[in-house]
Image (cartoon, rainbow, N blue to C red; front, side):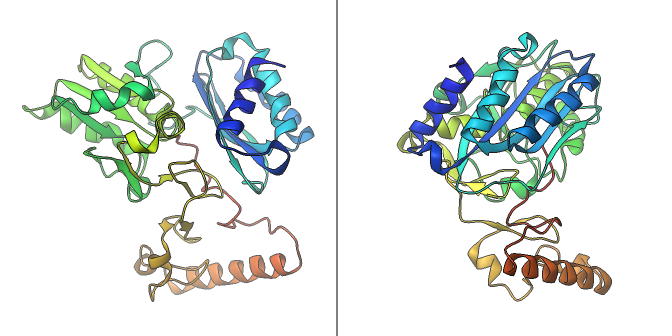
Length: 334
């Protein structure tokens, strides 16, 4: 058995999950020079389809990024392929589990960046901040001289973050460089930065950007929030709330189990039970976040789409539209 398969088995054991009863979800990435990344696309697409793997993998010259879901045997075959590719040695890999397939289909996409910042000249493969292991994160963020920065977007930070973290209030990662420039211009800017995101990829690229902007002490959480939740006991945790994830679970709790949030089909915002009681909430059509930004034509289209999803479920079929209960938000900004 390969090392990556052993890692998967160990993770399932920690989650107290029986392999035969679950789908394994793997969030993975690595910044690495891949000049031949286009050649990988058909190979990975065929490998995943042959083994019941669904989700999204992004390939670019700067590396690989994605989240995939499969029964453990199918996931194991993908892990064997990864382990045989020397350039993917040291790949960031985190496992969780779900009772059902988290994605509708498998897509291997070619991109300009594996996480879109709009600054392709920033290369974490050449220079990035200092990794901080999850077990060392608490002591770092407890330092009063450290600014802790959540590099995720507002719809993610709304349901959970680290205690005391600064929220840039971005709607997309493309907006982060503008926020960073404002921080640089502040005469009272901090000397030490500690950055984090869902799975480690955004904060790794953000830390490279901050170094390029002149910050000397830049740290980022290795493996992101998901690895922190996996490694740090809840009793010792600085995490508050749930962690938004880019699949049908919407969010996970500290035990990496599906959380309490659903998703608005119209705007993709996470919704609590109380949000779904709001008068603006109509399943698949609108919520209080987007009710004022949708016209009657859009709501009519969303209502028809939701009708088709409901009919497909009643027939025991999968609707191939964007069902928030079964499909990710379509983003891969882990």
